[in-house]
Length: 449
Image (cartoon, rainbow, N blue to C red):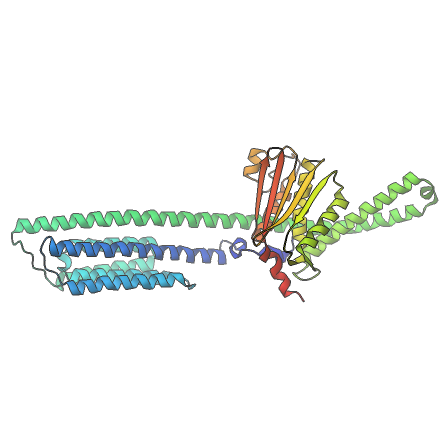
């Protein structure tokens, strides 16, 4: 099967990205976006917690607080959240520096609230540890150490500079009990936020690791395809000369009197020559596909005509016992004929014919902005183990060397086009469905010379 290099990089951009390339960079930005959103959510909890704590201290414990100044800090956090949400809605990258600045603002807001409510003697001063925990999980090491230094400096600052609060109970035991209550509330709040935060962070990390594992797998598959393409190209070069020699010899045989007089022998020689010409055509197609750029040697057509011509060519070359073909793609679309897509459909049809010699069906239809091809057969269907790992190289029940490569290439080419392949067993046979976005088939046509 021949895959033009240009087709390998179409479709969804990240599918063709390597683990160290743009795919990894975009995934890092996605992770930072999720982490910033998580900070926004935690900040909303912090705002609610501060409001509740201020109200309880002011009206339950009758501790007078500078409400106007503390309300200003709460409004600052609300404004910071709104600004962060606007940044998330845009297309700008979220970097480590932006996360660091966001945490720095949070630390500044906490320092201001502590300054207004007793300084380092406030039991909520231990919330600095929560800020450092967030930094250790989200930021680069250098940024985290800066947060550690900043938090330590703020703590020392609050020991000497703060606005004292007038505690209504002057007894030492009452003051100690009030302090212990505040410490308990701070402990519960910090523990709950750490659990929520670390759970979400671990989920983001698992998603990132799964994404990178997928990129590595696809990179390995693409390397496998490149090596197969080089092997096919080399084999095509090597086969060209002997095929041409055989073709010349067969032409000479057809001119011999003994062959001309023997109808049966003459027919066999003619059939042999036709098959040799077909082999030469296949070799030529391999060489063209391995070297051509997008737009060179391609043909403008429509999806309906492309499929009709493809099925007619497959009928002539494979001569199936019975082929049911239904082309219901409406309205039609202009595309550029592509060898890779043609070979993909040929591969699926060949597999269906091998499994079901007496009947094969192919149906084409349009579902919104997708071309959907369904190929059915009346064979034994897919084994359960094969069905689970379908699309991986050498996963085949045919028991022959190189088996499974056809569907492996089908899955990869369709995936490069941004499409999907679905294989399933039916009551009597199997069905393979190819779903291809029209944009991947038509975009290239706009740039043709």
